[in-house]
Image (cartoon, rainbow, N blue to C red; front, side):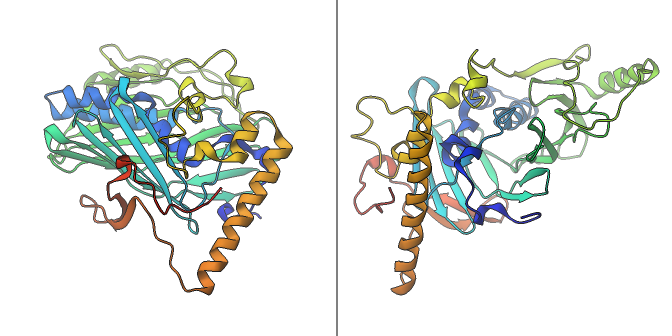
Length: 386
């Protein structure tokens, strides 16, 4: 299986966590206050700082989340409405091979639209599994007539075969404001030989003339700060002069380094929320993640029958019935294969319900865009996938 793409391989349920990938991408919305902050700011550079903090916060929930979310079934959906936070979201699994998940979130008061299509490629490297980020994320701030786009960093889970599992994120994330020409470049640093760079993120914001306006730094597992470039460079120089600590090579999971060293004059952009005390025994879920599969009274009557809260394998795993979960997972996968064979015999193409394949108007790249109508609650003719 080394260097193979894992989306076509059935994995034992022991590798899973009791959420669908559609629910996992909904965790982008955990720090929605950062989008609301961006909407309220009058200056475009200040808005970019809030958007950059949101982009980092969107991957923060992956810290210590070594369980694999369930692959969504073709046609599976998920919705989340949080009136107290002023948004609603719908997502749909629009393709099975390759697996593509599309989502669309919108402000309840017309401030923003947040959407994207995600198709991560998973590769097994013997001792680790790497997720390559495919797909574009778009945030539109409607009152400012601005659109931002970016893609997520790479994610790697180490020690798959032996040792303690640990996660790192790495790669360059470019956030572009297509209206003003401002750009934020964030470098998610790989762990490196000595573990010094573990979890670190450093970058900058530049305006359309390519002048650096500020430096952004921190850790995706902790917090993000911004400071002017001169103060940052001066601090780096003084740090190097006093740096004579011994270093040791990393063979296993590196020890977590000291928390972020704050440069004088910095402004806090975002700080991660603490996890519940029992999180380690609950797949390292955040409070937000723990609520995503909740089926509250009255929800069954309004949710689409394809909503992943109704998936019996995930529900069984959440309730600790692992053997039932494994059997249900196998049954659902076989049912999906049989439906695909039936369509191929009749030359019938799969038709998505809530999203259409099109072109992102800001990047010119292929994207899956929301066609509307989900919240009208007309759920006739939806596929029987469970």
